[in-house]
Image (cartoon, rainbow, N blue to C red):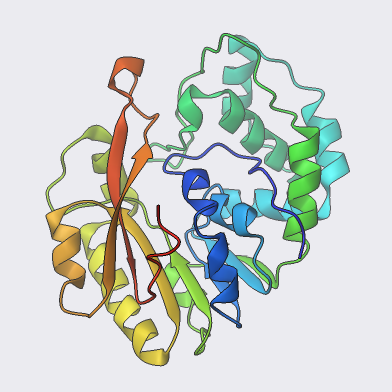
Amino acid sequence: MVAPAEPFLKWAGGKRWLALQLRGLLGVYHGRFFEPFLGGGSIFFGLTPPNAMLSDVNSELIETYMVVRDHPEELIKELARYEYSESFYYEMRERSPRNLVRRAARFIYLNRTCWNGLYRVNQNGEFNVPFGRFSRIPDYVGKNRIRDASKVLRTTLSIACHDFEEAVASARPGDLVFLDPPYTVAHKTNGFVKYNESIFSWKDQERLAKLVVKLKNKGCNILISNADHQSILDLYKDHKLNVYTLDRPSRIAGNPAYRRGVSELLITNLNIDNLIM
């Protein structure tokens, strides 16, 4: 097994804080590892599970993962050409490179230099997060991050762009499926949840809950990370699943004074009392 790696992207709702607690899961399952809401990949890079099948519906994101896996040195060389400035940031935001490596470099650069590492697009599918102001120049090249991530990604079975249902269609008994969807609830309470609703609707949450039941009945091992909200609890309450409430740090608020610990749910058909602190 390869050593854990640091994610090469910043990602809202990332699970680095949870990955260490879940390392013990590697002895629980003996099949494949599915992660269909890949995002920044904190759980995958923290666990480095064998036989991983990674996917996300975001095609730009998946393309970037493939470039990190297959062309790390070309990617590092391209990123090293970029500069950290507000004018260059907005110039890059407007670009649409045709070259695969340059597209991935643009994605990583914008991610590491934008406000809070937030991925957000407008109605035309264009990235529209403002420039981030940092006290120190961010390490957007990240040579070690990219090289380490490339090593781990080369151990995977597949990296693909799929809807979550399609992504886990081949899951079999004994496989481990980690589901970390955008946090949407039945009653929207803030701007970030409202944005999530535009990319992952409440109907998608209901579709996910039905899929979880199918996977459970198949004999798969399931972990779902989701919002700590009554509407989410209601979706899963009749399916004999274990529910854990966990505290995590939040860095999405614009004012640092409002960045405080928030709770979220971990729902599973496994007994992980000995893993969750």
